[in-house]
Length: 515
Image (cartoon, rainbow, N blue to C red; front, side, top):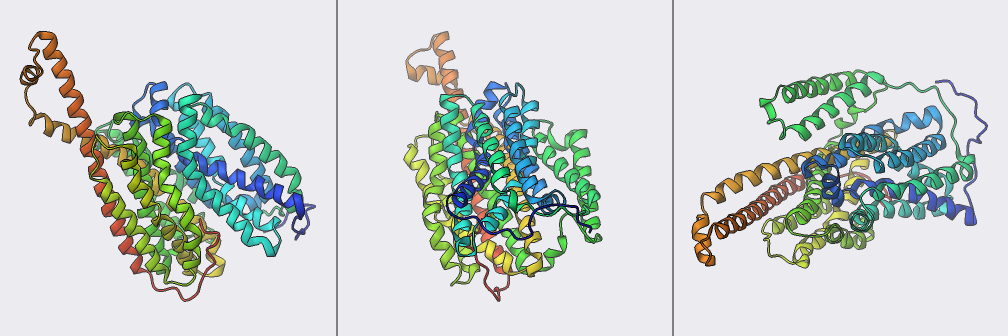
């Protein structure tokens, strides 16, 4: 690879004093808003669906499109940084993120909003790893632990605040403003970083990229995600379109695997999977994160659509799962350096499964506190899942493979969340129909209900029909919700068991900045 001309010093001195903390806050905020946008729309789906005249299930495309686009650009971050310079890619992505947020807020149709979210995800993908990279460069060696802590806290806190921020904004300003608030933040962070961090720009190299591998990656991931999103509406494999998407996804995936294994510089280094510890860790995190994210997306849909919650209260209830997670995170990071990480991961994921199992006994009469309590307790297991699992995965690969393995792990984790969102919402809708049909065969006739209410007139009979229909629908949804939570709990238990396929790590990896 031949270097292009740049005037940036190879190893600039770390920043000091006020400049250091201003730069640290700019980079932390940049990472914060990108991670925030993963969950800020979770409680906004009902508002967006109602405003754009689509179903709540179609409204979840706003979540999945962003996640898939972001996941695809994560493996490209290294190539982009080496080809165009770390700071250039960071500032361009930051400003583009703000512009795409404006496009999202101005959307007047679901198609326009999904396109905006795809572009927003493509812009946001490189920001997470590059913000961490730049933080490590601007902070002196003695304060790198502080830099990692700052970055990690924004990564952990942002998904917790997302539902709260999204709920409050939707109830008081309108869903468009969950995107508009990104604009000034993105522009300020982008422009300020461009000037303040100019000495930390890296040299541009004529790096090659595996365009065929990238095309195949986008092809099979996009086809599979679209198939999962549209399957229910098109009656699955009774539809020619769904069958074609399934074939494209299968052929694209097989071609991608073959191509990547034979390339010298693949876009995704699949050879890393030869490490049993890494493979086990990635399978565990994909299953567990998919289960967790699916339940997190389902909860506000259920609460707002059938339990009468406002977006604000739905956000507060959903965010309860992160309260104890934040408090337990430092303890989990320290403990993961002293205890076999497999034990911590097993206990953490199993605990999340137990709490999800408790949630499978919900009723329509539950108070907000009763809904939030198991989610609050579930948060205890989250840091014991994420923190040691990251360390275990990194300890299983060679030092020169760490960057590729971190990107691959992040890619699969994000994709798992997107796929789980589509599967969970589709199954929720299907199971609601199944339980409704079952309940209809068991209920009293409308005339008997009208007689019990003391009004057998035609208007009384219609009122009884309406009451019965509402009752049957709400109970069918409740049963379907519990059914999904039960399945999710089983997946958690299975994911916890998978971690024992990994060998005990022979060396430790610092997880104080794990994400």
